[in-house]
Image (tube, rainbow, N blue to C red; front, side, top):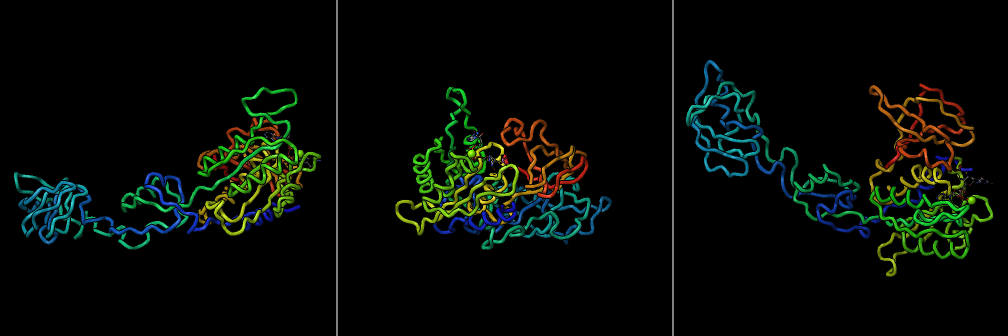
Length: 424
Ligand SMILES: Nc1nc2c(c(=O)[nH]1)N[C@H]1C(S)=C(S)[C@@H](COP(=O)(O)OP(=O)(O)OC[C@H]3O[C@@H](n4cnc5c(N)ncnc54)[C@H](O)[C@@H]3O)O[C@H]1N2
Ligand code: MOO
Ligand SMILES: [Mg+2]
């Protein structure tokens, strides 16, 4: 059986990033929220745009005021008021000052700002009581933070609040971003009904499709829900062919173990998929199946799809499905979506364990629970109740998965473990 590390490396090799030419769309500034930049953004304006004041005060010539003090104040004539947004009309000469406010454009002739608190006003004259530390004090210079023509943001950057501010400032109102990944999701199983259907004896509600839909949507991908498919080869054949033809990535749950009604792997092979992974030494999640479909060069029937389709046959048990998703699928989707390598994850933190953790030691074991910050130290609290891959109830509020390496059977309270942070 493959180790988790081996499986991870196979999955990440199969996951190929979207094409930075073909898989790009240009969206309006606000529509770029949460999207991934597909090309470098370069601004045509310096920032600050103009020399401007960092304080409410007076724009002066440093040479006029460098030797003043409260005992020997220097008096200057005020030639102009410069509020923010106003273009100064006068050149400040020796013996003169301009009233200026934070963000307002520096007048010609002045090179320094004295803050209001270090002055005394008498009519149209201002007394400077403290000499500025140095010339240029409290002046924000044109181009000090950014020079036009250099790169502002690099491809692979996610547009969150700070990046949105940068794009707006640079007046970049059309933003080149990668298209959203299309991810097909369906559940397999004769026992499954949807949450709004009556529950006949022996049936079970399909929770996996709902969990996966939310996980993908919250990450900014486009989930395509294909419903519940019975454990029937023809039905599976139809849905899998359709999924593979319409999506960049397909996630199914169930039907990947060794039971008589577990058909998924056989059908993937029948349809021309190359099965790269059939099981992984991970608990929960052992029967994870991963296959790749070559679609060849893009054609007119699927102009908006990547050339390959990656298929994850996730185990049916609800916890196993989510654990495999967090551990293997999410990093693959992040890579395909165009994110920079440092953002693929998974993200592990080393934390102190609040309670003992047990494993049978044969597979790398993932224990679900919560991360807490206690007196400045991250701690892990395993979920109470049964750590059973069918127990989706105590999975609620999970924020981390503590990892017990394959040979490790016992972690004592107070010992340190690696915890995979999970996305919500
Ligand atoms: N003889 C063996 N049996 C099993 C093995 C094994 O190695 N040898 N592995 C076990 C492990 S580990 C897992 S995990 C499961 C995986 O099974 P499948 O992926 O084939 O999934 P199913 O058999 O279809 O279902 C398993 C379980 O999950 C429930 N389920 C399925 N789909 C959903 C859904 N959409 N929402 C909620 N719950 C779902 C299903 O009713 C079953 O209870 O196999 C073990 N068996
Ligand atoms: O390992 Mo399975 O994934 O127990 O449920
Ligand atoms: Mg099964």
